[in-house]
Length: 227
Image (cartoon, rainbow, N blue to C red):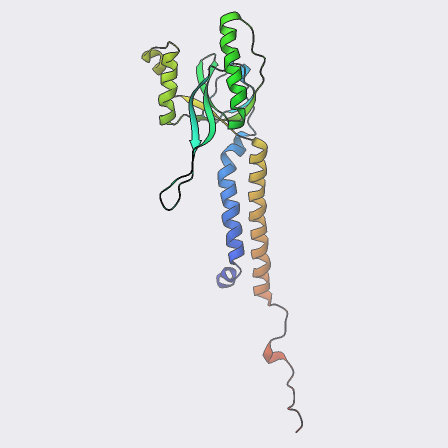
């Protein structure tokens, strides 16, 4: 392999394909793998099925004990100013057979989960099962320390002692993921890398064989025009 000709076969377009394809694969790889794991439902968790970091969760949320934290985003500009806060979902407290798990929702699901939370407390008081259905799917992660602070405070408000909260172990949170979108993103990243490899291969072969056009020294000489 001629290294110099190989490097000449690499252009800005192929480097751009490498960056874009690599970024898509990097951003989606973890959830892409999780998407093929057997899914644990919220009902399964109530019946004793344990989840851990990297677990795949999918199904209708059965009960919710309200939210203990919310997330907002904003844009910071070069002059130091910033845009207004934009709501980006809430963190809900979900009961399981082993204790509790957090659920990070999309903003689009907040209304449904708030209603389900009201119905859950009504169920506790009078036994009427919640009627609201909110489908969620996602990956289980370790809860960030700043969010875990509010999670522990919420558990204490539920009546748990500090010792009982600590006994529950590492706080976990289910973060919403559209696994169909993840698979599409991962596949697109692979396609971009394949296109990059194909372009480099075609250009390298052209470098090795030549363009096929006649070189100047190979052209027949032309006599000067008669004066």
